[in-house]
Image (tube, rainbow, N blue to C red; front, side, top):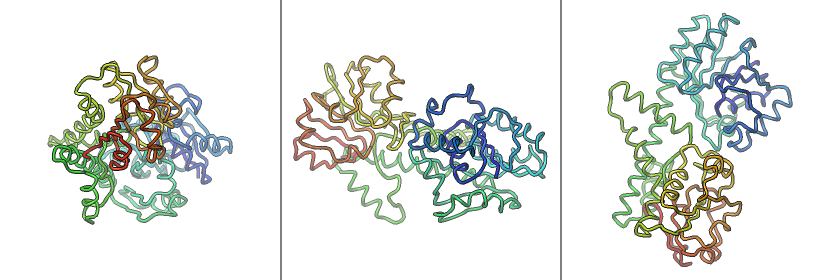
Length: 419
């Protein structure tokens, strides 16, 4: 099939690469992106591991092209614009309808609002169709999520194009557990509701962890007890120093704004505010350990990306903690397997921040270590080297990935979240 993809987000590039890989002829139109850049200069591509290579392969094969005009005829038009670009989506639709006024199939994967698909459908008339497919992309695992999803939701107000949509998605349905079909409004609301529920779970377990600190309770034990209850389960039940990223954060904020528009009090707004505070928790624990005196201190940070598997530092806890350390004139040494280039670009010539390729070299003669991202590299360090390298053997584990008792046996001062 011929597919036109519109957008410059991570979702757009993942969709374009994946659709081309399975044999479609794909044209990606980077609407709203400004000037056309080299692929390796586009942050969302560079940050997602494996995406740049796949895009280059598909362009070399001829199945994927980058275009800047709307003249291209296509069987399917795939919209992955930003949440703020609904006006642009409407403008594109108007132009497409002039080129191909009948039999138009539009896939809406945009983070607009509940009812947006109905509005787009009304704009192009009954002879054409708009289908909503929620964007379930997870940064750091975007290609896997698109190519081997466990569930797909289709928001359809008319099922006459169901066969065509199923054919388009068939290559990505080999590991599918469930295909759900519902109205577009219900599908849009479902996506927001799922994201909101996950955010609430994260906010709640972090709140429990902070309380556990006050009550001398190990939250990891409580976490295990909660997760064993089948009514609760273990997903999104790990306390830490807050969630980040672009997509997840944007969906939560968008859903909170929908509540606010409808003049309802929203728990999500509280979760967002608490999450921003939670991001600074490792710094606050460090501050408390040194009784508010961080003068002449050197602090190492393991992990700058907002989660493992990505180089993105969007809304990452590392930014909050580094900023707080800089404000105290602390020398900061940072290691991350993927995100160092982005962090260097963010802080530019900040003299208090230095960057390390070797995570063990970063901790030599430091007064403390903040672990902020749960990269596999950090899960099982050489404890002897760890203690021997540090001037003051203090480790603040912002992700609760290390064994508290084991570290204590080696003489490390361990501070976790709720531990």
